[in-house]
Length: 610
Image (cartoon, rainbow, N blue to C red; front, side, top):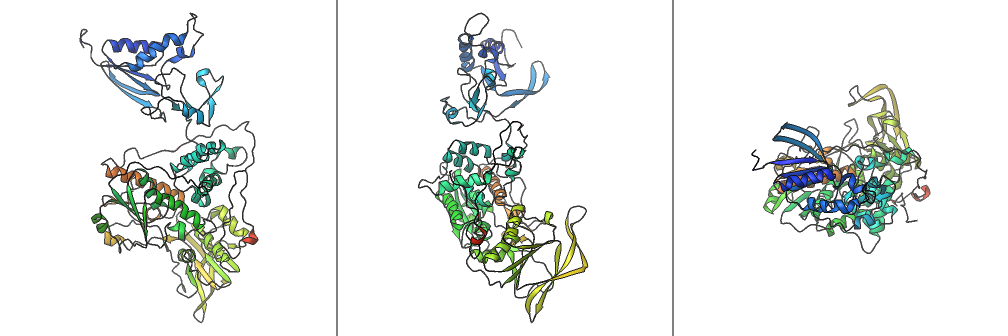
């Protein structure tokens, strides 16, 4: 480059007074300057020396004009919260790779009003003041900081948030509850999850398994706390309805109103899209409505949270079967620009053993659905439930509420191998359900064409050496169990009768074929998620599937790359709990055992504000 015609750009690393002055001199000479600083504002150590400057001058009086000049100079680009990762190339042609830490504040919108600090519930040591006092997690480095925008200090991801499938900011909403800010806590929860009341009752709460308080005494009652938030809101006259963005022209069809379908509709509605949900059943909610018994999820709670989604502009049409009443072609003709398939798993898997077609043999999923829709079958006094998962537990406890006197749940697995969640098994045992482990059905017994019992053989192992489900039996060790009804709940399957007609591929696992990251099927603009894609999972996992589907559909409709930046790693480190004061967990009240017979009243009674 010529001495009389300076060109190019310069990177200055470190924004103390030396870096600031160097940047100003270079910028005044015509260079484009990138000023890199790892903190949230420039100023360095000199900004900390206010009233203690060695020359007895006020350091801030000296540095402030430099801060303003640096921030306003057209040839200087401030790159705060940024560090150098790698430098390659040679003088005159360097390439620098930078790592910018998230500020968690939109600098184009922040006016430095300081309102965020006033309401921030988190205190942390103020390192700018050498930890002599605390500051809020939402902060400005010092009053005269440049840039003047605030930042939020987040020291990694909380274990609970990282583990939650929907990645709810659990630590945030609990801190807000502690401050009495219930509406703000609910708003924060609903940024990531539309069903605080539903999941407050049915979630398997993996977040509590990694709660840091577990190292002190017990995990926080995370699930119960967001149920409390939702219950308070649903009982209020001014219910929280999430804001939606400006209405867009594109229409999107969601097939299935289970948790995945409704979550997709919820997040798309927040982005301003017009969404119509089509549901085959006469009620909305999918398996939440016809698979989860009412003693766990009251129907008025389910309906209330679905109404919130409808009030956001989502239209739900029940009694509409995809593949018959509507098709991909008809949806396209009606102006829908994208389709999300979340049809769930509404069929039961069969045992394929002798006598399975006898009267008195019921299927688990169908039994729960009939019961939920008010058409419960006659069971008799003695009921045998075959299966060891959550559906089997729900079947057994529902049968008890329908009047069965002797209920035996029989499964292949040992007690510690049962796929049902531990707390559900404990609940079944508490209510008098007999659980028999390590037995597999060989045949159904009959007399005069009627079911009379089941012959079982001992199951010696459920999984093979590769941990693949492959039961082994001792067929010489047989036992018989008599009963009036048997209900088989060994797994769920999808009804994919629409797939072939629609040109949608079915995977080898028996679900819809789609990309595991984008959820797009081989048909452009058609996406699939939830249980019909993943297999049987929980409500909160379906919510995350819906969130990912929303992101893919949004990108598809806006011509964006569907895969870019989608791979996320949710790692965490648990903080040190030494010296933490013990605070016992408050148990939730439950409906007494004697009050559960003959009805589907809710068991868990929730928290009050006190």
